[in-house]
Length: 394
Image (cartoon, rainbow, N blue to C red; front, side, top):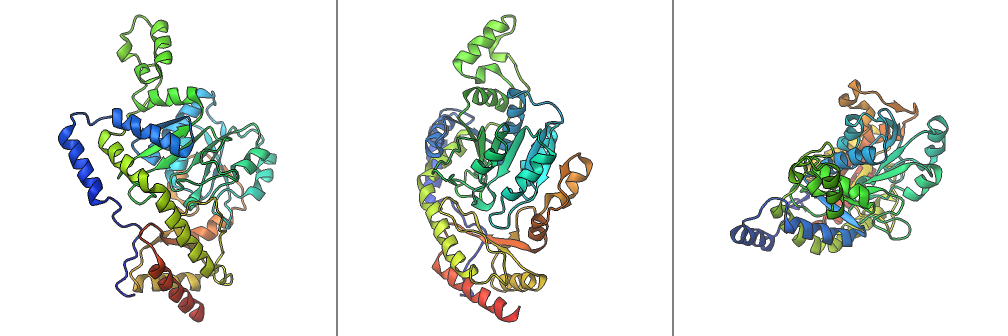
């Protein structure tokens, strides 16, 4: 057991995939955004169940592009309110500030680390004018988008699925019909990897067209042929291939990343199944220790990213860290903890409810260890021993 490797993620790129990449480099002269990117986008759209998908440079730029395009397409004004969870990744919230929108922070549930559904009515009483809800499926748990829609029937909803590939709603949909767009990350530590990279998926063709242009500097030529023709007719005095119709970025990804993604996605369902089986075995252990941990739920619609631990007190927390260190198990804080306590927020305007207690608990007493296709029964046996030792000494 002492030599067992338990890292956040092991090398997920196989030798066969490296050979595939090498062959592509040796036989292709096209490496920037091209036919392999479009092929990967089509394959991903089919897998996730969306009409359209865009391959971008990261999950973070996917969030930036989606928020910017939502603001423009749906004509949100500067200062309009966006509901976000108090515990998520920084680049899930930063685009809201950067687009001059106002975040309204809501607490998370200790049952799934997503938006606290029970707080939604209280938020709506105070902020009935929320225009957008950008929820996060944190750690692969499903944020209940249908319940959010019930409370805010007129608000737009976007989903950050960057560490929740394959998470489904109660009807088995990977692309929630209540969502205007969903983002995904293929960072090295996630369910599959293109090393860096991300996706935005949407069923809104107009939004998709706008995001295609914004992804590539705001160029009209990046839109669908019909939209491109429309802009050429509107602006006949400008060379059409250099016609800019919106502000934009360079958030494109490349052919090499797409080649790797096309190989990785072949194993995605298998990897999700392994992760979820690991989670179920972890859950069998932790559900019997409610005196030590806040026990999260175990649902069939999740797509587990990690094995989380939110401790009931500081002694349990410190004992667990001690055991992880002595057994060479990598661990991390539970995402960014309570974002309201992070210094980057101090120069921005935002609002929040005063009773954000659960995010504080996660901030002070939460951590996770890796869960991937490389984790198995030996790791769970070791975890059981560690948890029993903690229980005996707590």
